[in-house]
Length: 302
Image (cartoon, rainbow, N blue to C red; front, side, top):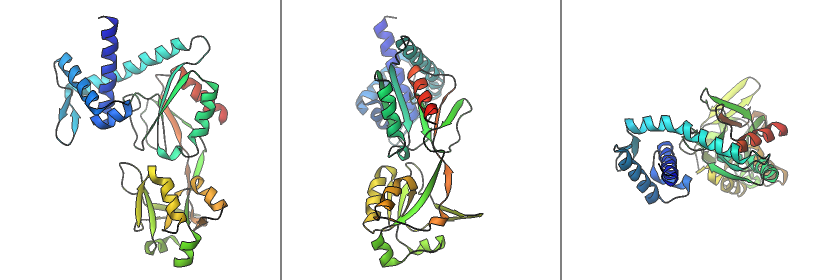
């Protein structure tokens, strides 16, 4: 097969794996930086070349066929290994080159990951960094990512996970002074059921209940939502809480600057729970040079 045909085949497989992981053309196109029509044409071309359908399409969804599932299982690790080998070859002169692609939740993009990425890019100017921000747990190999960052999710057995950022974080409840002046300061989590609350929904999941703990006592409260926003709108949720629209429960590190300047006030502070911080996860089988350098930087920082 001519080299240009081989390159085209590898590109088509990369698009196929992105669609398989995203369960849709539009989401895959967004991740790949292509138009949905280009992605659809690529899949059709690949199916024509192979002589079998890779996806079952309906007006509402697409699903892998048996042939498509088998192709994804066989090719995902091969493409990852091929790219790792290319990165190793490009970095053979003691200069790390290539691409680092991370799949991360929105929660780490405000203050945990940016300074780490800044130090990494300063240390390795020949690496191109790409961050795919989404909250659901993905198969990083199928998604053509080198590694992912998540909180506490169950990972596959062939994955290594190491802490990145703070080992522990804390949830916090906050309100504006104007809100508390109008509706009063809650003294127990059960009182939140009668308050206006701003809720944050993780993409693709139900609105999570608010968890509290004090000593050995734990409580879960599912208060009515005056406003619900996704994690991408978390900063807007903080702004609305500061304007007095309701109580907000979220990461303490997001709220600390507003506690410091007095625009938000801690609420039920002795009930705030702690939990494990985020973890960087990656396959034990593939370690391209840009990822190895990133893991080393995270380890040194710890």
